[in-house]
Image (tube, rainbow, N blue to C red):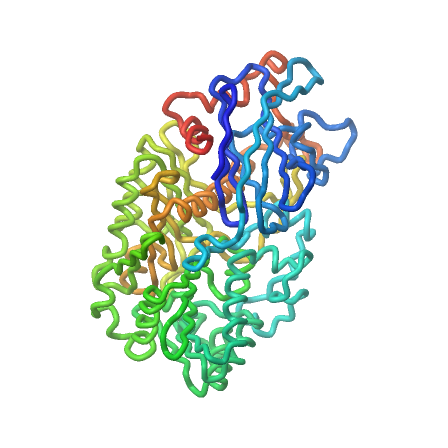
Length: 585
């Protein structure tokens, strides 16, 4: 983190995973303040380049306003007190950001004011030698994907079942700037690819592999190359995963042959829901990859997901024992000692880590600490819980319901449209309150800009059939030394904790908490705008989107006769005020 202040203007940079949250604050904004110009100097660069805005104060008469034209923020400043810079093609090293207050003293006049510069290291590894975190980009339904790849929809197989036979238009495992799989899979996919390739190349390593969804041809090809150095536990829950002609059935048959029979099909009490890879040397677990990212086309390239790679013998060893139990005696796991407690790991100089492994006979073993952390948070709570709308009970759901009424900053992201139902059951979404007492939205769900995209935005691709937001994480007290993250494969629901093979990890560390909080903010901002557009009516009434009045930046009250864009950020006890103060200092 780095910060700067001058004349009541404040700037703070927050490190995310290959992205940066830029927080600004102004003690007393001048009436003619119309936003912030943000410029970036990339590693190895010689000049600052402005970040670009799709919105402008006005558009040329007769021009096609469809999002294809973007404007430098030095001419079209951002009218927000924070911005997440997510480089299209990030590189390692120091990024410098120059942020300038922009003023409009008269019609047609834009004047630069106070300017601040701060620098931050956006190197990819979170805690070198201990923990690396990666997120998928989750931007298949976005203006950025539209710009970069033309909304191409041929990157997915027709169905999950035919994923292994699918001939992708690009090699998903061959990284390049023009490869949509590289761009969409981002760090989460890169971490998995690197780990598996390392295991294939190093014949002294063996691999234990937990899978729920499994339809990536390139991944199964690599797992086959491991031969008898691989053991696998693959879900066989109804009604898709237990079919011989399904992707998981076909992958299991191939791996049974290549490993000499070292594949177990099982579902604990409900689902084998872990997505885990363990690397061993001489039988000793060395590293473990875990998280929410399924080994599937949607999991890697469409959904919002996260992956964590621990290089710690004790943590890897716990997952090694977990795998052995699932491989040999899965039916007795929930009654075992391993399922009855949280395991604590405190390595000097490293984050504190605690881990719970399910299914539990007591469903609250995993949930209660998460709910308590939400209730005890003093500054902020962020969450991205895919199926929260289907969870009607348990410590996590009840704590989040209380959260909406509490005077602290909170943002939530869910996927309300669909879910992972119980075997044989149909998903039935329940109502989830989204508005906080001050009228602001506290929770958003998946949405995209379709044919009714308001100018200057263009229509986006839906991203195929299925869920789009698959993360499961909670962040409490971002920015404080006591900040915590809860994450893993657990859906944070009583049914999952009691029936599914899952893992839930608590990490107490400001660096990790910041990374996850920024991910929540990035997704919230992306979806909040789309939520507002879904609820808004196209104006004038009956007009086609291309004929509608384009969205535009707000001018000062003296010129527009309307409230200033920043007024809501200075309302006492409001979500917007807490937002401004939380990230700008």
